[in-house]
Image 1 (cartoon, rainbow, N blue to C red):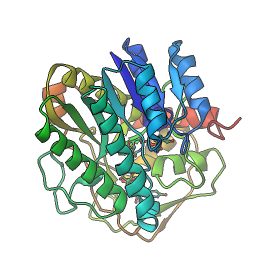
Image 2 (image 1 turned 90 degrees about the vertical axis):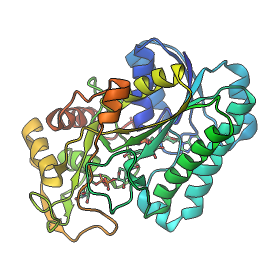
Image 3 (image 1 turned 60 degrees about the horizontal axis):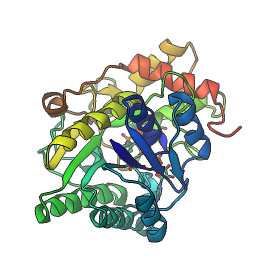
Image 4 (image 1 turned 60 degrees about the vertical axis):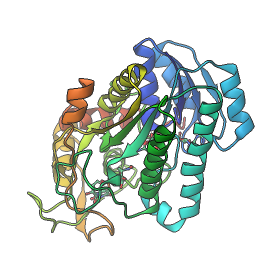
Length: 337
Ligand code: NAD
Ligand code: WQD
């Protein structure tokens, strides 16, 4: 298939681009590089040994996007592009609603205009209401607590409404849990701007000497060691989930929603200890107050993805730590030279 990958220069998009090319698909990437570097695109080409078109275009630029559709005959779109920082979304909600929602509506309009009615969308476990008891299942109650999460929920609603209005659409909504890790080769990985918000990039930056110590946000949660529990998933397993979702929508019309997680909950200290074991690096940490807005436990029930897509994860936490470190140690400054 010929796939448009929006946000393909980013962390999950770049890994998915490699898997798409390896699976024999043709791709084109659209990314405005607002949270990524052109070097990621070069490395996708290097790893896959394949050429493809890259457009530095903002999805909000209607003419720029139309030009991409005019130059290519797409079968489907995988839509990663969007802003993702929860904290920033609280202080700048309009920036998030505008970039994430308006750009998605513009993309969907363009797809309609060109008769491209297959889309895989990056949603998030954050759309589940915090009152649900894990493991989280796709049909559980939805509810959000911050503007970022609300953009994901609203886009899901837009996609469901779109299918209700036109049953020619084939839509896959993928709810990611906590992606970490990197491609085995250590050439692509997560490259956050500034101080990382997320746990694994913070740990790898401590390991590489860029940060002094990790702050562990709370040790009084109702979990096996008191620290927060999440479902960490290797980004390559996640990427492969997109290939499976694409297969599903190439043969079926409708809206198909899947959790992509391992089903295993790991605490902050489990991650730290696995990282130390996998890498031999010491990780200094101190326990500090809880981070506002954090929940105690979140992990997936991914049996629907197994039953309907034949997808299951391959990598455990130890391997996720190994690969995160392999990326960071080979690229101490990310994609910057
Ligand atoms: P990322 O920031 O690395 O990648 C997103 C890419 O989209 C970036 O390269 C950015 O430059 C691009 N982009 C943003 N707005 C754009 C616009 N208007 N036009 C064109 N390009 C634009 O993020 P990621 O971690 O790879 O996440 C990919 C998707 O998955 C996002 O939608 C994110 O919300 C979602 N998601 C991520 C996580 C996570 O923990 N990383 C979890 C759940 C869901
Ligand atoms: C994981 C655990 C923290 C940093 C976020 C978004 C979510 C989704 C994935 C996009 C928690 C603890 C963290 C640190 C710590 N993104 N922690 N010290 O919060 O589960 O999810 O990313 O959709 O929407 O909210 O991920 O990596 O920030 O935190 O102790 O320096 O690590 O409290 O228990 P989170 P995270």
